[in-house]
Length: 111
Image 1 (cartoon, rainbow, N blue to C red):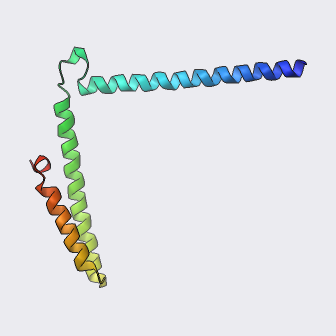
Image 2 (image 1 turned 180 degrees about the vertical axis):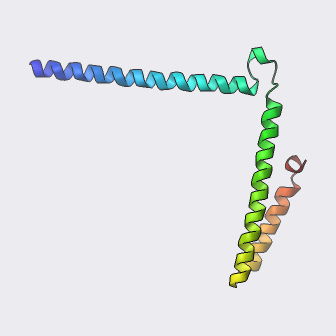
Image 3 (image 1 turned 45 degrees about the vertical axis):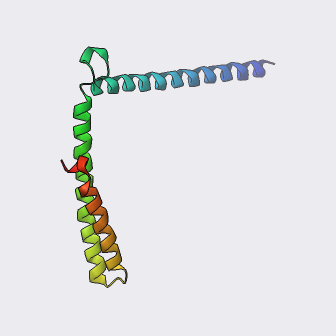
């Protein structure tokens, strides 16, 4: 009977610790979400949506960097395919060129 009580109390303590840990994680996540909203300018003390412009500018810069990386890597890979004599190197080069032209031709990224 006493071992059953000890198991019951141990289970109760374990459940309490798990619930406390989950509440701590949720508190941290809620704090991060509030901080992210404040950094984006979506809270009343920073004005109307002031941080969105900087967010969009930073996102556009990141996309430009990814496009430049894609183009350089595709040129290097297609060059290696031609050097190794791959039978479909021309097809891959045309597809990579069309993809790069589509990405560079997008109005929002190239400004």
